[in-house]
Image 1: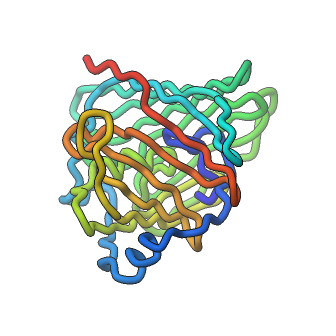
Image 2: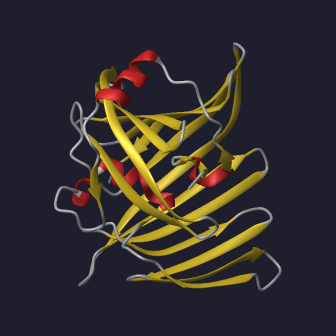
Image 3: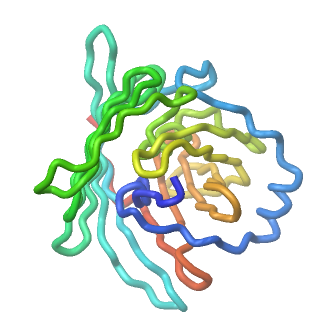
Amino acid sequence: MPRLRCALVLLVCLCTLVVPARRTHAQETTAATGAIPRRVAPGDTTLRAMRLRADTAVYLLTAFRDGSELSVGSITDVITRDGGDTPLLRRVLTVQRGASRLIDSTLSDARTLAPRQHRSQQPQRQLRIDFAGLKVRGTIGPLDGPGVSVDTTIASAVFDSGNWDLVVRAMPLAPGYAAVFRVYDIETGMHDYVVRVIGATPMMGETAHVVLFQLGGQREVTVWIGETTRHLLQVETPLGPTTVLRQTLRARATP
């Protein structure tokens, strides 16, 4: 979705508008010569959703502007697995910015990453979405009102836009890898996201894949994902010509 609900997804929760960013020469070269992205949908045989382990991660959000650094909040990301005939991946993201708190929770099929449910409570509004195959029902509106109803049938299987990073972390990332996948957002509908592995670098005790995440046009986010652990290590989002929002892993607790 063009407005990512920020950061850990990054942006997935803060609803920060991602502004078009200038590409580096390396990124221009990659975009020009990279492989044709593979289309990935829920249940794709290349996805390894079971590698996404139950754990708790804490991220710091820092804004960098014209050489200045400002702490803007934190994100706590809790992932658990529910057993049963249809194993589910439950995720709760809590974004804290001063006294303001946003709680975003999702349920996905633990094997295919197909979405099942999405709930979000923000200071001024809330949303509820239920997925059943190609059917999407939900409401979005103020905390103290009934909200606007959504009842639609989508054209193809999608992922939850709030879990884009889980999809990328489950992919067979490798040098030169490229993929495109479709997501659904209750406010803006369906969108295609494109990811390309543009390099690797040491980070937090392991080699990290450097992934360019393209939201359409020139809007891009850079993501670092652990090669071995598949942890989301860092995210950088351009907010303007001289401003970058960085989400950085600070603590992790795996059962």
